[in-house]
Length: 324
Image (cartoon, rainbow, N blue to C red):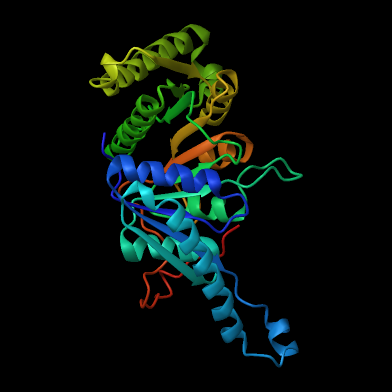
């Protein structure tokens, strides 16, 4: 299944091999173009005051040129894929510059290695987390130890939201997860959570029998929505397991991910409230803080990034808030 046309891989991390390898394979299989990108952090102003060798922007340009030569070497090593390969080096905040490149050049996938485990246990550091908030295209964050194929793929869908935006995002999540599972000959696990709205509060007024009846009716509606979603080609697949469980979405997703020892989770990052592009939704935020596998994160079709294209001037309304 052809999914991508213009892939960007962030090659600025220390352990970039798995991200570059996976991106090159995807470019070959999708007949897509590939861009290797690195971002140079701006020189701290205090250092600029301490050097008489060159101006800060001149030093940054020298570092950027050195990074570009390194990217050219990497590009030559993977040139046998026979696809167009470009290199790009920017100066600034990594997540912002990657996102700006995505917007300027219409990239449809960003691939990046996740960070090695930190003392806090988080797999996704500041650059990866920021990309999940502001990048408009799918972002694939690879666990550093991943070098081969995925074995267990989890697709997390939201079956309790009935608006068209969420339905479309559910479908896209399934299509991506199904495509990856077929490519890697992996087992696909579809996880969906449901629960009765304000169940504890209603129990005080209507009694347990009524609540149980409402719970059965709601579960039946959710199951019907799942069955409608899992039509062809998914209904024809043999190695798909459905995990439809009662509970909070974040808890159910994390439990299933742990139980099946997932290598990759595919999920949407949707913010129901707040400022679009700054938050990634309570469920995604909670899940991402705890998982220890690779992640493919998708945005809804109407997502609007707070990052402006090159040459654009942000209005006060459009100006992005600081990322947490």
